[in-house]
Figure 1: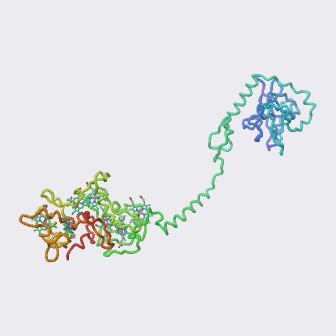
Figure 2: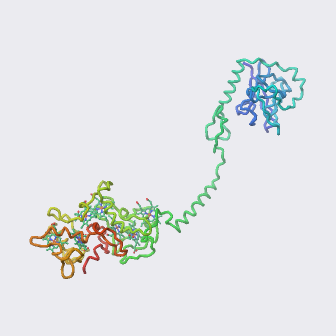
Length: 473
Ligand code: HEC
Ligand code: HEC
Ligand code: HEC
Ligand code: HEC
Ligand code: HEC
Ligand code: HEC
Ligand code: HEC
């Protein structure tokens, strides 16, 4: 192993102090791992190497397709070096001086030179002429002590191979702190885009971005709230004043969003809160509360201005209470009730219709009280008969009634001793059927289908009751 020699590199092309390296061999090239780093695209990654053998200096061309020239002549294999020599590597000139202490390499960059193509591996190499290079200052001096070329040997090839491989693998952190791992070897020359080194965006960019985004968003929220709604609100909730009398809402909604959507509390509470007046209270029947069925299940919103939430609710019953609906509600399943026809209050000779509780009964304003002696069955029958007879107007299909045109015993029973229990079954559908909305004249439920809420009242305190037009004075 050769003793380390002193190499002094003087860069006139860079603003850099002379640096001294102790080594027995030195690489010249564009790779950052080269001791003599010449950063220019014409320079190969590792183009040449200088090595000390028996106290003498030799230059080795390591890239036959891009040879270094020594005093204007391209180097093939290796060449001895003498003081006063001039190497040309790409656009760089490297002046060589050898003194007692070691070797001095002075690097200069030629500006405006043209790249020449030399290829030592090409068959025309001998006839190729590199451009003339101004040779070093003292041609006599260098001729005298130039060592003879070394015979090419396997050992030398292996030596440089090893040096080049090591250079290619060396990974030093970049002073620019790229985020991705530095690649090694040939992969380094494959270009990939990177954002690592891009200058960071100033914070003000984001602040202005936020302002530019937020201002129209807030303006829209203020002046055109519907922009954020899945679809416009129904007219009832968009209107600025109440239209129904007696009122069914405490105040107009006037297209407000926060009346229904609040951060705290359920939406149902908001609905019920506003829909609480003398004429209307938004109650929900017990079985529905237990099944988690609430306002929005029957009254959706955001279906457009023409949408009527009360009409939709009438249809919602059959859509949900259906054999085809396999969903469960708090573990409760639904099915098509009473075989898809009208429910009947008596089954197997027993009144299964639960009747009305005291509060609901009081609301009917029928001046009859339950007698102490009446059991559930008789009271249910009593309630049912009181609700219908001498109160409800006759409808087409029922011919017999009392003098006031209202239901009487004979409307439902052809005979009473014994009571005819067959005919009543044919009567229910004549009244508790499809409903025509009195205001719009629209058919809400087709004529031969049941109006579910006529028997299963949902909002018992609703004064605008379904049966109003059927009731006598
Ligand atoms: C009358 C009450 C009511 C008002 C007023 C109302 N909404 Fe709604 N909103 C609802 C209901 C009911 C739903 C459906 C919720 C569900 O399906 O669970 C809903 C759903 C939404 C949804 C969809 C969210 C989801 O969970 O599916 C958005 C967004 C929305 N509303 C925005 C608005 C905006 C914006 C406004 C004001 C213009 C507004 N709402 C006014 C009752 C209302
Ligand atoms: C199981 C279905 C169902 C549920 C749950 C329900 N409703 Fe209703 N609602 C109806 C039906 C059906 C109507 C149509 C009137 C009728 O036939 O009783 C109606 C009518 C209304 C009306 C109009 C009343 C009128 O006189 O025009 C309002 C207001 C109303 N509901 C509010 C609510 C509120 C608020 C809730 C929640 C607290 C609610 N509803 C829960 C079915 C329901
Ligand atoms: C801030 C008060 C307010 C809130 C909150 C509110 N409503 Fe209304 N609602 C009204 C007004 C006002 C009307 C129309 C009454 C009128 O025209 O006189 C109305 C009408 C209705 C009607 C009957 C008319 C129609 O279009 O079908 C239903 C059903 C109804 N609301 C259901 C609901 C439901 C369900 C909620 C909760 C999701 C709700 N409302 C929340 C004020 C409100
Ligand atoms: C979204 C689904 C859904 C809608 C809409 C709905 N219901 Fe229900 N209903 C249920 C569920 C679930 C139960 C509880 C069934 C149980 O407990 O087995 C129930 C229970 C009932 C019961 C009591 C049944 C019993 O066993 O005592 C009646 C009556 C009823 N609903 C009538 C109606 C009417 C009338 C409407 C329309 C105004 C309606 N439902 C709308 C899901 C719904
Ligand atoms: C709207 C139709 C209707 C009218 C009107 C009506 N009933 Fe009934 N009635 C029924 C039904 C429904 C039953 C139960 C049938 C069954 O058990 O299958 C019934 C049952 C009866 C029974 C059997 C006992 C019971 O309570 O179940 C008697 C008795 C009776 N009605 C007498 C009368 C008398 C008297 C009148 C007139 C004052 C009258 N009904 C008016 C529908 C009516
Ligand atoms: C001529 C029309 C007519 C006939 C026929 C009729 N009903 Fe009724 N029914 C009404 C009216 C109207 C009301 C509402 C009375 C009220 O609100 O005071 C009513 C109320 C009811 C109620 C009570 C609803 C509530 O307010 O809670 C039930 C249940 C009922 N009817 C079932 C039946 C059955 C079952 C039959 C067939 C045996 C029948 N009705 C025949 C007109 C009729
Ligand atoms: C003519 C009156 C009448 C009409 C209309 C009516 N029902 Fe009933 N319904 C009854 C009676 C009576 C019962 C048995 C007693 C009870 O549970 O209230 C009943 C029972 C029910 C039950 C519980 C038992 C079961 O089979 O699951 C549900 C749910 C129900 N009805 C839903 C509806 C629905 C949904 C509609 C509309 C398609 C409707 N009803 C229309 C009178 C009626």
